[in-house]
Length: 594
Image (cartoon, rainbow, N blue to C red; front, side):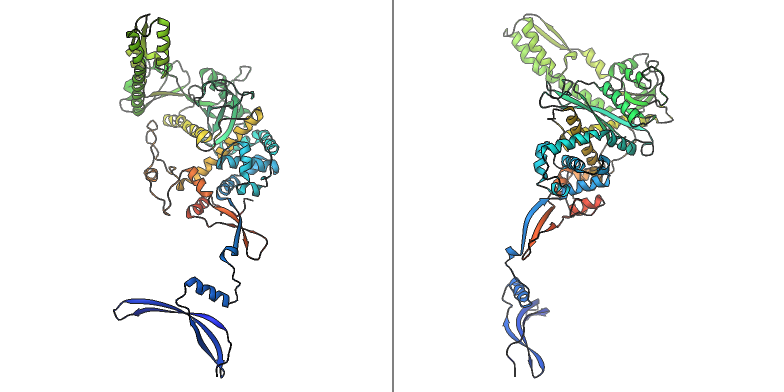
């Protein structure tokens, strides 16, 4: 006889492959509540209820409850007490650690942690220093580096400390990237740019030529020294009125005296390495020759090229009938090699630009001429003022002949001047004393064109990534520390962009041009990326900034489980793109930064 009681449990029965009378194949799944009991020494089962009509999750709850599990409402099982963006700062910190940047900055301590946080913040989320202080608490960066409670005094003290470390940091970077072992060509690139200032109290702030188009604003100048691939190595800040040649002299002193690098080849643009600087480059202050002469690569200005193209000059158009590059010599440049290049694409572009500017100037002049002819504008002085406004906007005054009287105005194009300038379109001439046995003519052209890498770094520092400008600091050392932070952030960005090239629009393998004079081209793979194709994992390609923003969605959550007091840090489930980003950095996704 069956005994009362016995354990109750859930049984699931599945039947697959059943064919009904209509010949249709069907699968069935049923669930029963059964009780197990003994009858005369035998174990038997009794169906208490058929649960098949209940929803699946209800059946699961009944099964779990009968097995002794403690059931709580879904909203009370797990509580996320805090969620912070983590992936972006974790990735940048991982690259910094891989590059040895913490040790490069100096001895461990709070100042170094704050300096590291400033550099990482400049890469991830560039903003003012005071705004950065509040942002640290909104990411895992502040907590993990122990700087989320830092104040303004701590921040400025860290900047002052970092400024004192600049010479040591740059010397290590120079040894890493400019020394002969890493840089067999012994070549360094240098260029100068500007950034405008807010306020008038900084001793470095001065009026000068603004490369940002901020006329009438006080500014600073800063020069960036890189290796041949454009990897930042050192930066120097100058007053806003400093010229290119002066900045070049200062950086050569740094490379020669502080980095102690001999027989370097310095590459700079035509306004930087002037004849006067060349004459002084390899002589001491007392006029004696130096034992470790430096080479250089630069370009000639337009008047010098025009002189070479004179009737009896060495630069003749016939040289370029079958080639775009020719090496010549001139008595005006003794001991130097001159590499003349002609770029037809550049020639056509400059001709088109000139014609557009001339036409735009004539459009501005037309109303002025009409007012003079109608008698509404009279007097040589007032007419000259209006003409000056129109003719100076696009800087085309040299191409127009202007005749002004009190009652008349005549403006015509100076065809001879235009033709003389057009003859130089597409031509540029490089000059260097470096022998052909050390670097051939195509190599000279490539080295000079590599200045584009410094220009690219300036774009990243100024606008694309790091937002250096404008500068708000008053103290000279703080301004220099701010620029140094941006330079070190650019160093990090340079390596991150290379590592993440497979996930971004970056051209991973740009084709090597057969002719260094021709414009660079993107590879077919890079063009496919730009056309909207997806990566092998089915993810869209992103910009560098877009990838950082995507990594920020990888959060670290403080989780408290039901019945527990303490919280447990847990990462959100990474996306495939986030996993791949860390794989390309050759590091696992860290739960903590350190």
